[in-house]
Length: 305
Length: 163
Image 1 (cartoon, rainbow over the protein chains, first blue to last red):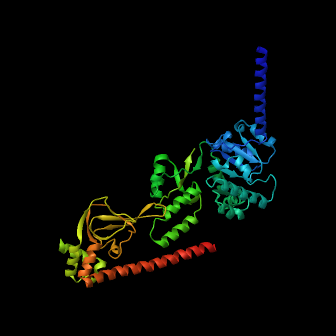
Image 2: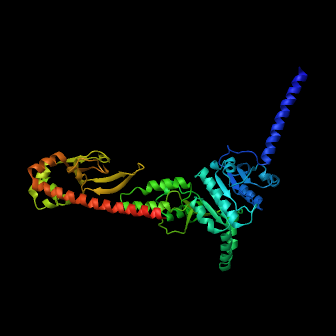
Image 3: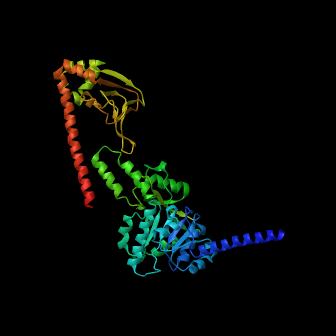
């Protein structure tokens, strides 16, 4: 009997171990579905310096340790495994597949993600047209799955910017354009590149840009009051307001409701046009002191780290 | 009180044809009544079937409407000192109120019920005619505005389709 018990226990342990190994193997090869994960960040695409990007995300944010990051790419799983060699990325999740495919995006549960970043992936092609087209397709697919998911997309060529805006992409990085503008600004403004770097590097003891939400109690008050409040109470410098931040769908619904609050039809039509032309995450830098704070806006703040 | 009311009615555009006829205004006052309103009191609600004209004598009032989404907004704020009135169309036709009116302070209103106005009209047709004429002018102006609003919406729709 005892011998039988040992054999059965050994058999069960063997099966359990084999299941765990198989599970880990599948995860390593990017074959696991993560459709119960929520509030995570999804990175679509691959870049040569993806490791630095992922480490920066882990280091800068408390919400996204590696277990809350899902990488979608067709890249060789061994390359992803090499990323996990760094302890900070050891729990990185990987979904292997075409990141612009609906089915693959669903495997990473993009509908419940906190943020999705679509990289200008040059793994399969160097042509900016092909790369940017895939980016537009990916954003379209994500917004089809969930309009509320916050999507940031990297574009090489700005000619696709209107396509991304048409599908309500929340943030767009124009990498070629950004680089060019930084260079040209540097040529006319001394130290510009160092200044920009100091702001975005987020080194301890330095400064950083932040965009804290403006509470409802402040809506209707003036920019000057907000500036004074931040400076006097928190020693933070407000340099502008980020309008139309947050979920585009919710914002537009709210704006539509507010637009109807008039009996003047001409005013109503104007209000509706304004809602239609609403640009998400629109920065208003150094507005007049009497600029009125709106709903769904954030303060653009320079603060010490 | 009647003298004060007559002076008040002289300032109301609805009774423009009777401004030089204190006898007519006195007869009108006789068929109406003055009511007290309390702060927060709802005078009437949007979509209520109405049958009285109100002329604020004192106090302040909010005119409110609902959007299609059901949100309430303030169309205007009125004061008893202003030569204003509301609900005048109910003297011709008992129909649904197009807005809600709420008193935002204590005050008084002169109220004229349709049935009493009808009696006044039977007894004094020429006087009533001048009031109905003013109401008709209001209606005509609103119709012209509605036409202009329809064109505004039409133009906006055409632009939208074009783009």
